[in-house]
Amino acid sequence: MIIDAFDLPEGHVLAADVCIVGGGAVGLSMALHLIGSGLDVLLLEAGGLDVETDTQALYRGEVADETMHSPLDRYRERRLGGSTTTWGGRSMPFDPIDFEVRDYMPHSGWPIGREDLDPYFPEANRLCEAGRFLYTVEEAFDTPRQPMMPGFDSAIFTTNTLERFSCPTDFGRRYRHKLEAARNLRVILHANVTAVGLNPEATVVERLTARTLKGRQIGIRARQVVLANGGLESTRLLLASRDVMDKGIGNGHDILGRYYMCHVAGTIGAIQFNRPVWNGYDIADEGTYCRRRIAIRPDMQRRHRTGNIIARLHHPRITDPGHGSGVLSMLYLARMFIPYEYGKRLHGGVKLGLGTQVRHAVNVVLDSPNTIGFLWHLLRDRRLAERKFPSIIVRSKRHLHSLDFHAEQEPNPESRVTLSDQRDALGLPRLRVDWRYTRGDVESVSRFLELLAGEIAATGVGRFEYDPETVEREMTRYGAYGGHHIGTARMGVSPRTSVVDPDCRVHGIANLYLAGPAVFPTSSQANPTLTAIALSLRLAAHLRRRASARPAGFDATEGSPS
Image (cartoon, rainbow, N blue to C red; front, side, top):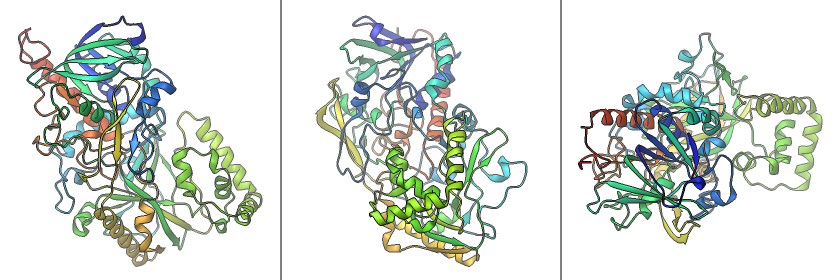
C-alpha cells in the first residue's frame, strides 16, 4: 500500500513492527525482503514519485572546498527509488580483502567478513537486475572470450574480473507494483523524518517525528527503526537529534560524521598497444552487460602496500583532435549537452581555441560513417533499449588508450560531515561537507600505476607512458568521485571507534539500526550499491529472526512490558 502523508490528518500516529526510513535501493530492498514476513512494515519516503524542486532543495548544504566535492543536492534524489532513478547501474561486490585489517591501510577492518554477506549477494544481484552473482570471465560465460590484452600474463594484475550493469533499474518504478500489493507493508510518501526521539535513558527509540513541506506533522512508533536514507542523510538526522544526547545519537565519542569516503578516480597517460585490445562490453547469457577491468591481485596489494584499485582501458584524450576520431570530436563539441559527471570526465573542463575546435569539426566530417554509426548505436542501444548500453565505448584505430582508474580511499577521521548553521525549510540543520584525501591515497595510486607500466612493458604488449608528477592532479581533478557517500557512521565492535555494531545496530540503542554505505569502514574499489543492498538484506534477515525470538507481551522497546 502506498499512502501520501499529505492525506493523513495532523498529529496522526502510525505504528509498526519495523519502520524503514528511506525509499532508495537499500530501504526498498529491505522492504521487499520483509514482504510476507508476518511483520507490519512501514517505509517512510521523504519525496514523492517524481522530481519535486522544493523537496530536492532539502538536500542542499555547504561544501568546504567546492573544487573537491559536488553540491550536496547532486547525485542524491529525494523521491521513491532514491538515486537509482539516475544511477548508471554499475554493480559489483566488495572483495574479501576489503573486510580485512591491513596494517598499511589506517583504520581498516570490518567486524564481519565477506563470507557473512555471500548468502545475500545473489538476491542483491537479482534486485538490481544485474544478472547472476558470477564475477569472473571463467564463471560468467560458457564459451571462451577474447583476451582483454592479448599476451598480458602478469603475476601482479588480473584482467578476468567483471563489473556487471543493471538496466539501470529504477527501484521505485520497477517494484512499485509489489509495494502497492503487499498486505504487510505501507509506504508513506512525503514523510520527512526530522527527529529521532529517545527515551530519557537514551536506550530506546520511542518515537519518530515526520513532517511534510505543507506543515503537517505525524508521529511513528515502531519496535525496530532502520535509517536507510543515505550515507549523508542518515548521519545528518542522527547529528541533529540532540534532545536527549547533546552531541547527537551514536556520537558519544565524536565518531559520527568522520571517516567520510568516496573514491578517488581519474584518467591518465597513454597506452600504446602493439595489437588490438578489447575494451568493450561482453554480454552474459541472461543479457547483462559485463566489462572487464585490470585489477591488482590481493596478495600484491599486501606486498606493495596499495589500496584496492582497478583500471579500465579508456579512449584517447578527447581534447586532442590528433586522435582522428569523429566520435570523440563530436562528443567534445557537444560537451554542454552531456550529463554533468560524464561531461567533466570527457573533457576535464579544458577550453580549446578556435583552431583546435575546427580540427575537431574536420574529424567529424572525415570520419562521418563512424560518427553516424555511433549516433545510431546510442539511439538504439541506449536511448530506446530497456537494458541500456552502459557507457561510451570508442574503438581506437591506432590501438592507443588512456587509463581510467578507480581507487579505494583511506579512512581519514579528518574527512567529515558536520551540521552547518543553515537550516532547511523543515527547520533541520543542513550539512557541511569537508571531504579530504590523504598522502597515502596519492602514494597508493602512484604505486599501482608504476607497477602496471612495468608489467605492460615486461609482457611486451605495449608501453604505458604518463608523468608521475601529475598523478595527484589527475586523481583529484574531479574531487570526491560521484555519489559514493561512505563511512560516516562506521561499523565496529566498540562505541569508541564506531557508530554501529556488527548487526548495524547503533551502540547503546536497543532498536535503532543503520542500513547503507554510511556503515562501511572501508570503501573498496567497487561502487557501493550492491554491497549496501546485500548488507541491508542481512539486516532484514536479522530483524526477522529477532522478531520470531521475541517473547510475547513485549512492546517496541524490546524490554518493557506492553
